[in-house]
Structure formats: structure tokens, C-alpha cells
Length: 263
Image (cartoon, rainbow, N blue to C red; front, side):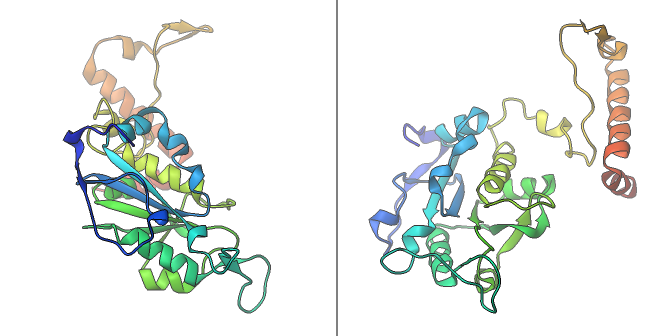
């Protein structure tokens, strides 16, 4: 993004043998959390990440987003990126000699702790703990799959962690990548106006968040619970904790059992 305040990072120039046409136009900001996306659809970004608080933080240079177009690394005149599965089967598989160089180009910008994630329905579930850990990294590279997936050798070679949003299958990893970035960026310093929001929300303490209310005091004959209007902060905290526990026990018994087991 242009007009980036200097207070959030300094431009850094790095030598590269990569063609200029494959480079992002925005200069890197040293010391700023980055997300690098390897995808067949770079135009899908920033998408919703360019809106609201994440979009504002992107404009302010609190984090950076770069895309790497898989098609630019395609094979032959038609820039082919996939081929039929070895051993037969339906669909197509993204080639190792396409995805590998694209990931290598993305990782040439990596510094410090910088994991690579592949959006995959067979991956480990993405959760709030992963988002918090990712926010403490220097950056992340997200590989967005398509078709039947990518050649397994790429996953092995780069030590990629497969991550899933849930037990369902999507047509590609772009939406999942945006969801992961959104969950992470909001935890970066200065992105949320009220840092306390991340302390009291769902999953922050292993429980689902308590119900929220605001004006008007009565709506459709439904009133805000009296305890929330009492001004007694101790009673309010106790009510909210009880509500969180009840909701978690009812809707997410798996989280409830885990929370009970923790000291």
C-alpha cells in the first residue's frame, strides 16, 4: 500500500535473481508482519482483508500482503500448472516443478520465524491458539491449493504444515487463507482499538463468549438482563462467566471438557 507511515517500518531492498515481472510492486517494510500468498488467483486479494480494521491496518503499514501468482511459474507456452494424478484418478494435481519454485520465491523474503501453511481439508484445525502464535511470528506464507491438491513432494520438501478451517471441502484455499490472516492480523499490536476485546472474546480463555447487549433497554418486549444494568462489576463478571460456561457446555462440549481439565 502507498502512503505508508514511516513509524511502522522502513523500506528494505534485497538483491534477487527473480524477474521484475514476478515481483510485487510494493516495497517491503522492515520489522512489519507479512503474509505472502501463493495462489492461482492473486486478484482475490486483499478481498475482505482490505476492509474494516484489517484494511485500515494494511493502509497504515501495520502489516503487509504480497501475492505470488502460480501461473507465472507455469510450464511451457501455456503456463501449465497441473497434470493428471500419478496412478490414475479423477481431477488434476498441481505440479511440484511449479509450486516448488513459487514457494521458493515467496520464501526468499522470509526472515526469523516464518512458517509455511497449506490450506487443506486434511490439515490440523486452525484455532485461536494458532492465530495467537502466528501473530508472534515475523510472517507467514500461505499456499492456496486447487483441483485435487498439490504434489506431496512439495509438502515434504518445504516442511509445510497443513491447516483446515473445518470438516468440509472448498474449491480452493483463497477464502481459507483470508480467514486465517484476518484472525491473525486483528491480534497484531495496534490493529484493534481496544486490546481488551481480544481478552474477553470467544476462545480467548477456552470458552465461548457470553451474550452481548446494548441499547435500547427493551426491544420486542425483551429486556437487557438486570444484572448488566446494576453497575455491580463483580456481579456482572460472575454472570458473564456463568453464561460463557453454560453456552460452552451446551454448544461445544469438546471445549467444555478441555476447559475443565485445564488447571
